[in-house]
Length: 100
Image 1 (tube, rainbow, N blue to C red):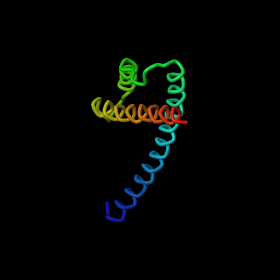
Image 2: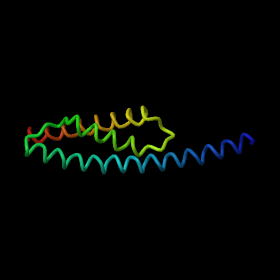
Image 3: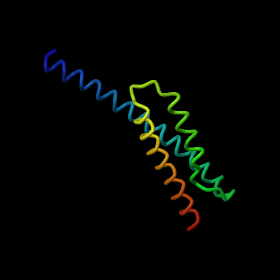
Image 4: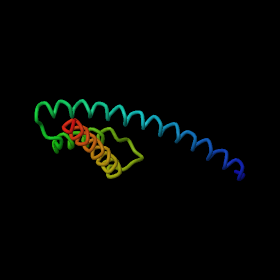
C-alpha cells in the first residue's frame, strides 16, 4: 500500500467514524429525553434519582448484548459514564425546576 492509498483509506475510515459519532450523539440525546421524563416522574413521586438496582440491570443488559470487540470492562466504564451524565441531567433539571 502506498502512502497515498493509506491516507485515502484513513480518510474514508475517519469519515465513517464521524458519521457514526453523529448517530451515537443522536442516540445519547434520545436517551437523555427519556431520562428527563423519568426524572419528571421521580420528582412527582418523590423517588430518588440514584437507583443502584436499576443501574445493575442496565449493566447486565448491555453486557449480555456485547459481542465485542469491546471488553466487558470497557463496556461497563462507558455505561458508568453515560449513567453518571444522565443522573447529572436529572439533578440539574430538578434543581432548575425547583428554582423557578
